[in-house]
Length: 152
Image 1 (cartoon, rainbow, N blue to C red):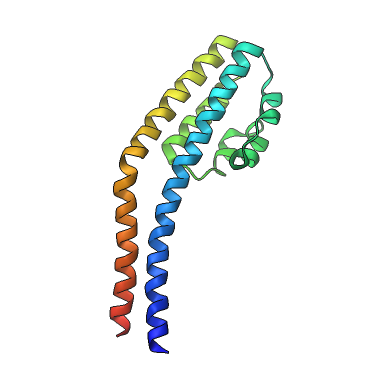
Image 2: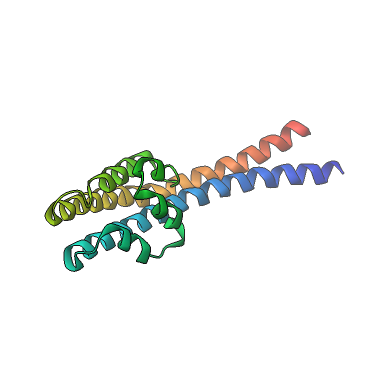
């Protein structure tokens, strides 16, 4: 019975490490989805002169459905739904408060700036991801081992 408890504790620690690593990967994927959305909005405004509500309705991404439903009313509140870094959240809020409020050229410039900032952030995240993933996994294994040692 004690061995089963030890194994469970070790597995819980390992799982926590892998879950943290997966959450980090999800952040990268969500930021990439936001970049895709910004590029889509930029193209629809520039080439088709579409209104924002119709752009939001036609865009389909499961990760951003709830965000798109709320962003037209309050970009700041909608951004709190997203599991992204604060820097990305700030860029997205600034973009959605500026886009569609001025001329087509101003909206295009806002989208270009937002896309540039997101691309930089994604590049940084991709560069640091392997190191952080290893740290999180190692931490989870260490926590599991520590729990096992404390119980013995």
